[in-house]
Amino acid sequence: MAERTISILRAVGNPNKARVIAHLAKHKGETAEDLSKHLGYPLPTVYKYLRELEAARIVESEVKGNVRLYHVSDFKLVISPERLMRAFEGQSILDVYKSKYGDEGMKRLSELMAKVDDGKMTFRQAASTLGTTYYEFVSLLNEIGAIDG
View (cartoon, rainbow, N blue to C red):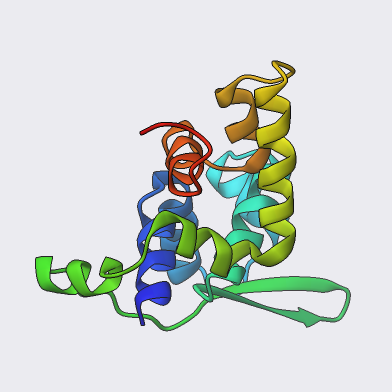
């Protein structure tokens, strides 16, 4: 349950992704091209959002003929301090990262950490390359003991 709650919060916490969800709720069965046109987002951005929303199981797609149509999955999000506490209880940022990216993600983190240590990359560049925020990247490094807190 916690991982699902976090993925939904992450999606609706991004106003652009939330707008995609809202649009698909109103206009069922749209293509990425339709979304791009109606929302004014670049097509590559729409595809990125749709991939992320599908991975979070918030959006589903189906192929009809030679087009892929996107629909909002049925989900309900009830937020309370208690539910948030349960969602995040006992999960470190490292646990969340490992569950999302697995061994390949840990290998990538190690490679980027080495580049930062060698002065070939800044923390911010490494975070961006990894697809995390600066804060998440530094927190990951702190949890694995790569930097002093």
